[in-house]
Amino acid sequence: MAVAGAQWSVFAVGSGGIDELSTKIDDTTVMWALQRIQVGSGTFIRKKLVAIVCNGENTPVMQRAKLKMQTGQAVDILGAQMTVEVMNAADCNVEKILGEVLPFIVADGGAFTVARLREEYDKSLVEARVKKRFAKVKIRLRGFLAFQSIQTRPETPGAGLPGPEAHVSAPETAIAEKTTPAEKVEVTLTDALKAVASQYGAFNWVILEPVELGLHNAGCGGFEEMKDWLEPDKVMFCVFRASFDATGAFKHVFTHWIGPNVSAVKCGQWNSKVPQAEEIVRSHISINLKKTAHNLDDMDLPEFMNELRRLTYNVDDDFGSLVSQQRASICQEYLGTVMQHVQSLPSTDAEEHAQAEPADQEVKEEEEEETNDADEPAELPTLEQALSVVQSIGGEWNWLLIRYGVPST
Image 1: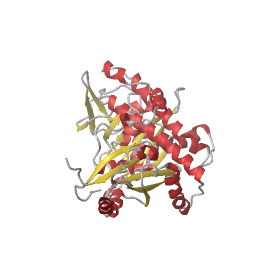
Image 2: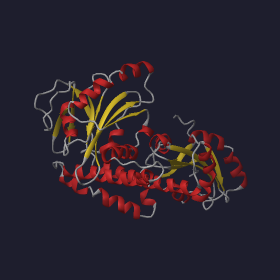
Image 3: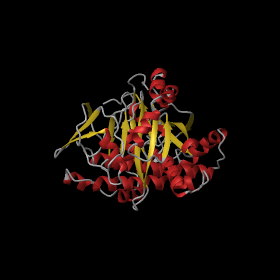
Image 4: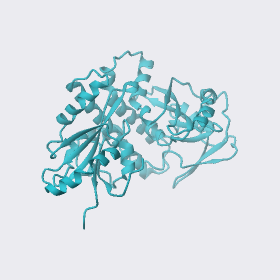
């Protein structure tokens, strides 16, 4: 989204929800916030984008009136579906905001009570904390994750990473190159698929591009890292290895990605390649679950893992009860298995590996921490970047605070 004018700027963003947002509100001016409220899971997941107009009660009357004239533009920029006004930071609390949101959730056909909405809201905060922690871990492990460049060249027999024997070879048109301080690795699509197929393979996800069905990218950072490499103007074919727990049980999910910006002509051409892409993947990997995604909101890790869990263990959980309650714990468990996998890889940079703390411990620490300034991003994102994350279901940040004009110096 292009933001009109240069008068608008990000004041703060965060993952701690309404309570955290309220600590950033300045009662001596008018500010505008976007709060994401999401409920349900999978195909039932819904989000409400709430614009909170913070009419600072200690703002001079004339200044407040002048700033409030910008509210219409602020709501348009934030892309909110409803608006709530508060007079001070104390007025911006969970009970008030959720109370205002509830009628809109019910109007959409949801059988929600205040208690149920609060339960869903609390679970979404836990998920946000898990994703926030994973984002920090990814920074520490940069250089061990996805490849940064893909170059077209003939496949060299025997090159790349070792993996289990495959009965059929996938057609090759690309090789991935990755350079770290200690090594240079070349990987073909076959290498990547073999690694994903193996319980201890060096990669846990791979993406096929739509033109030649060659290697787009592969990595060991799991589902969330894979999402970073999906392109909005392409159809792509992805597979990732999902581990449930420390027992070693794992399954594979094949995802047909249809980018939200792909043209109708290209969409038709590339979608016709789904059977061929599946065949290439199946020549190396047993697919346990197939999904289709049209945007990043559809790439919902807890829902994917819940479906796998039901298929694997034949669990029939009612929506809104046990499945809903397990969303956050499944995120945490999967993150733990991804980090265990990364740390088990052959070390090419012992010092950087040593910096990676066990994921389970990190998540526990995050849940025990009180929200504080140290949790804020080191550098504020642009308004476009912040909006993209806050508006997306499951985005790392769930609130955004903006202001109008540049303070005088």
